[in-house]
Length: 294
Image 1: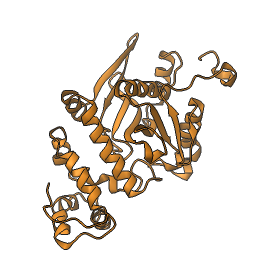
Image 2 (image 1 turned 45 degrees about the vertical axis):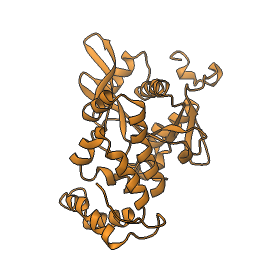
Image 3 (image 1 turned 90 degrees about the horizontal axis):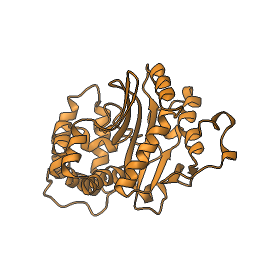
Image 4 (image 1 turned 90 degrees about the vertical axis):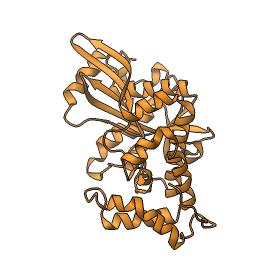
């Protein structure tokens, strides 16, 4: 996609009428998807694109890379989803969301081979297999199958062919989460799949009492080693896209409490930040019920 006209001098200046016309083409496709995009949402998206046109043009430039052609063409709303409030975190501005979206796809293209990148964009790829009698557990990586505003890649724990636990993450600029690192993994979803509690419990027993969340974080550390990314940031429960005050306690247990137990510390950006590998804990710091497992 090419606009072929002069851009406004500043990101927060309204785009000229001809530029708005150029944007109406892809946005008109979204208008047909009534379940996902109401007229109010479309109007808001159009305004946010127009007032962040420099950022949006950079994103489109990245998405024109051959490996991403299927994403941009197959899903009309894909290039615009960073405009949605709550994308990745309720605590990010439009500019920060755009920077995260752009950095993620740019860095994937730079770090991964074309063949592997194309593969994980089309399907989930298995990175680890664990067998326990008749049960087969896998860790897979791929695009989120649902809740795609909660992260750009997912590590999944799969039990006998069924995803039972998900960790969604995005490669973001370190500055977005107040880190001095160039790139950071931002975890924005860490939840079991509804209706599979028994499978999660069975998997935990089979995996030597290691909780699925901890297993997937360990897998993310392995990715960090392979991709030369040395820090992990994790959002607060209240910043998670699906957070509701009604279920505050379970959300805090899955996010804030879990990340603190991992040794992450909340910083001024209101995210939990930790290095890779995770810091070792003294046995004195391990909860009484967890000492044997540790």
